[in-house]
Length: 428
Ligand SMILES: Cc1cc2nc3c(=O)[nH]c(=O)nc-3n(C[C@H](O)[C@H](O)[C@H](O)COP(=O)(O)OP(=O)(O)OC[C@H]3O[C@@H](n4cnc5c(N)ncnc54)[C@H](O)[C@@H]3O)c2cc1C
Image (cartoon, rainbow, N blue to C red; front, side, top):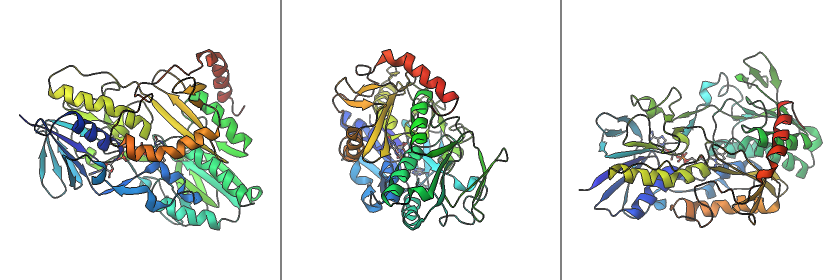
């Protein structure tokens, strides 16, 4: 009997899972339908480079259908809602998709309209975001025309996709204005709701130090209540104000709105609660979740989504065969952090282990928690790897889903706890 898997979303996670399942199971055993509202797959990590003229927007987009293996049905339709009791998905045109197993892979959406004033006066004139293709493109023009003044990068609230991206933007802005010979006329400020530069204390101390060294001011625990684009002011809920000439805002994120229209599926932000190791949704045993759509305690990042793919594909198949699920996902995340001047830093961690120094994935690999040209090349090469290895769901030897320990300097833990201590008191 043919079983039917419906995958909602054909971004990173939906594509990886569908391709992995298709490779492992013949069509007469498993029918796979992937739904997305459009046919434009965006390589989101490339958005960081667009404002600085280091990437062209049109090069970041490819047709979704072409990323899916032969034998996967693609439906270009918005999901209207899921009826979990009836195991049906209702699409925007009213058609219905019945399923035996469902994979929610619909990512996170930006909700800038949830912040007072953000999309009002000044939006896309002196208040921008690089988290969308239109925003990144418009910001490129604004940066090129910027003659000096205060540029504030503001994270409205967590969670956000790729929590290091706002820091990378600061580092690249420092590089960009130096290249243009006006760095001394630009004040760079990062305003974040966190108590440091990043969510993990150890990396936060390291990154906070680097921001300080580059003359970038960090304003912590700033919860943006209002953006006044007309007068150039961010206003915090606690009454603090930060003036700006140019603001680069990372808006609030939520899960896809259809999740809220699907009783029992999501939380109050429309993310989908799931078991953090099996990725089975709390809503129902036949529902699984991958990537940014999930409410689990790891970063919303493409690397995480890719590492989850192995577990989700295996567990969908196990569920359909009545076998026990694998608790295989360990929270593994890794991020290249572009630091400007052709260098980058790499961090690698999971649910239990902080980012540690050493090398990835083995003692002879890329340096961890340390700036290097090799890491910058790794970040650039990642794009080709994304399209040609990660999305097709290939296993890359040495880069498995489980966090590697071999190259990590566990003996540095005491040194790192010192750094962590420093992060509590500001910049080292
Ligand atoms: C600026 C920026 C920089 C980043 N840099 C990095 C990085 O350097 N490294 C890294 O690992 N990650 C990075 N990321 C994060 C990474 O891109 C995401 O974590 C990853 O793409 C998540 O995959 P996903 O499948 O969960 O979501 P997505 O890839 O966003 O896919 C979700 C899909 O669901 C579809 N969808 C949503 N709602 C509906 C609906 N109602 N009906 C039909 N379809 C729907 C969407 O159209 C979309 O195609 C970055 C993100 C941004 C924004």
